[in-house]
Image 1: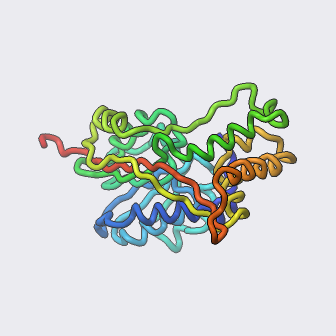
Image 2: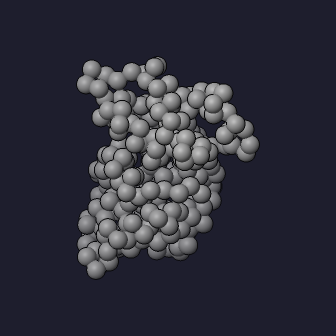
Image 3: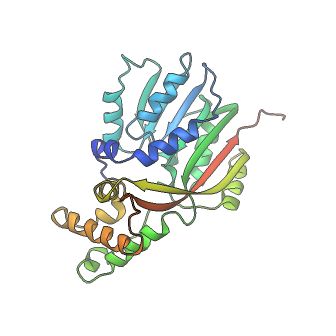
Length: 267
C-alpha cells in the first residue's frame, strides 16, 4: 500500500474532481438514498453526495488511513450528521444490503482483479439498488506510462526498478466488465470506454499531479532523488507532447464508465 498525502492530493486532483462532478450529473438521487462512495479520497465528493441526500446517509471508504482521517476532519459528523468515513479495502467490503447506490470515481483502477470488488458491491446493495462508477480503462494514460517506463529504464534509475517492480493497476475493457458484473449478480446497464483530456495548467501543476498520484513509480526512488526522477519524467513526456499555446499540458486518459443494478428477486 502506498502512503498518500491528503493535503497534496487535495491541491492536485482537480481533474479527478471535475470528472466526479460529471459523474454526479444525472444521478437522480432521492433525498432518502443511502450511498456508499468507494475510494472517497479527501472526501469532497462524498460530502457533496451527503448534501444531496439530506434524509439519507453516505459512507465514504478508502484504503488509506491518512485519507480517511483527513476526510473525517474536513467534514466532521457534527457538521455533516448523515456522513461518515471508514477505512476499508474495496476487495473486502464489510457491508450487507445497506445501500441504494454505490458510487466510485477514479479509484477502482488501483485494484487489479475487480471480481471481488463487484461481489462486495452486490452484497452491499439492497435489491433494486444501483452502482455508478468511473475508473481508468484499458489504454489509460498510455503516453504518460511510456514516459515513466523510458525514464525508469535509463541508467540513472534502472536499479530502482529491477527487483519486484510491477504496477497495481487494473485497466479493463467493456466485455470483461460486463461479464464480471453478471458473474457478481449485477445487471449491466451502460458500460463504455470514453477518451478524456486531462488538462494541467502548467508544468508545476503537472508535476504536482505526478507526485501526488503516481506512487507505483515514485515510491521506488529514494526520497532525496524522487524530485529529480519526476522532473525527468516531465521532460520526457513534454518532449513528445509539448504544452499548448496557453502553456497547458494535456494527457489523454481512457475512462471505463459503468452503470449496473442489483435485481429484485423474481424480476
